[in-house]
Length: 260
Image 1: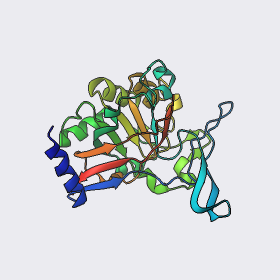
Image 2: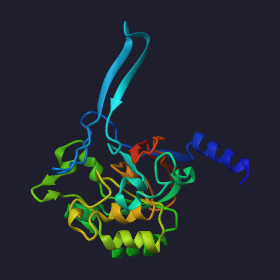
Image 3: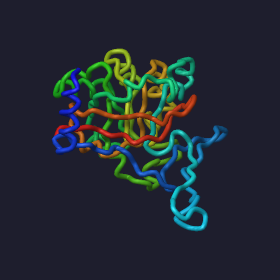
Image 4: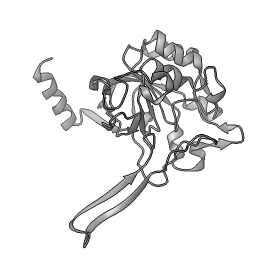
């Protein structure tokens, strides 16, 4: 690839011929964090504590201390996040090949289905119907499930916990298997708090978006937003997690490049 191509891209971004779309929720104390039932250990919520603010603690600067779990807000799931990916030496946030942090995206719009059923399950038939319209999902692409779930904001309806567990949409085991084995995707992304269906504890295997994706060294993105600003195909995602030594994931700023 010539330097000219990169120069053209920079010019296109500068002139808005290529738009940069932010797919990231704002981190704040009210950011919902996935809830696990006892006896499983919980993740800490996001907290921000002021160190100084142009005052006697630091007259010329403002900064804060931050505390949170790795999988808080819009976040990245590395393969080692799940037991099935634990043996990948290059499966941590600091060891993953950086080439994987820039990849094309396929956006499957399920908003109508989720409006009708908050527990909508994506099946291979939904993926194949999408491909009939937009073409085969290329190897190495992100597949993003657009649901409109992010519009629930920080309200209790985002986690949507019920007596039988969370009610939120997600993929079936068959859909995840299809994306891993038949399409060799780079990873799977959603608007909900986690990459699995809210009832995926009862799937076989349990939590297939984690179990199967990470077992195959695939990646995850959760709590995305603004997917309605992306085309079904043609967007390029930039998704580098924080370079945490032996990190299982991290909050990140997910950006998409979209032709204007």
